[in-house]
Amino acid sequence: MVRAKEFELEIRGLIWVVVLIEFVLFLREIFRRALLNIGPPESFALQTVQEAIKPRSSAVQSAEPIMVYGRSVADGETGLGQIPHLLDKVLYLCEKEHVEGGMIFQLLEDLTEMSTMIDCKDIFGYIESKQDILGKQELFARGKLVMLRTCNQLLRRLSKANDVVFCGRILMFLAHFFPLAERSAVNIEGVFNTYNETKYEKDAPEGFSIDFNFYKTFWSLQEYFSNPPSLAQAPSKWHKFTASLAVVLSTFEAQPLSDEEGNANNFEEELAAFSIKYLTSSKLMGLS
Image 1 (tube, rainbow, N blue to C red):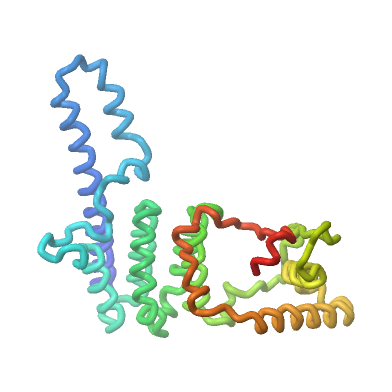
Image 2 (spheres, rainbow, N blue to C red):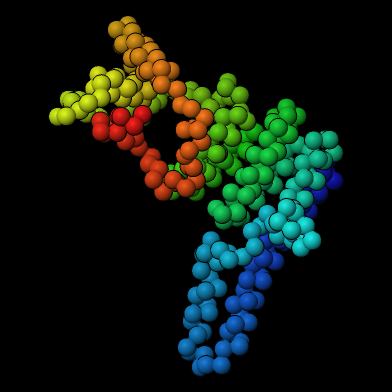
């Protein structure tokens, strides 16, 4: 047990060393340019110091991504860096129970905490690729809380307006990684944000050519989704909800989306147009 703890500390230390080396190389380049500057010190000294101490997220934009650091030139773009190789070895040892099973989860948490969001996307890609192994019961039981904490910390650092795709990847991973009965995924107290109201048009505008009743039925479902306990307050609400839902589902089934239409949208290219709230204008109903 003592040896396993020492091994974990050694691995975590190696990761910190890689990041430290990257930062030292960055500082060396800054001061090298300063030493080669032949002008008076007062013209560049302050700028040099400001560049050295500015936030790390800005400082590493032109640096090598952490997940490909140390990659062999001979391997090309398909090769792995030192960090993925290191994580693979630790994951193998955890899987074979040579070291404590939660070590790999702790390393991944440390790695995301010390990395920029650009690097975190690559790190999370590694997590997604190892989901089947990390989800094995002998590993899952040891590291599920650490993985949950890691994902929640990433979500807090991300912008819900500008990082929609990455947030979605994290939520999809959590949905697949944790079972439905997992306590952390259940709303134990039954608290819902009833103030998050979806506003839509109640009266049909002039010249509206689409079925306005369907428009109202479609968006009225949001009232029940935002406050599910309200369905149990009166039998009439439940009957109205099920009837409205049946109308919407039958309408969608009658107008299936072809494979060509489904593949036509490139969500990465349309990321700038994403919104964290619904577009409920009746003029858009004809596009559905």
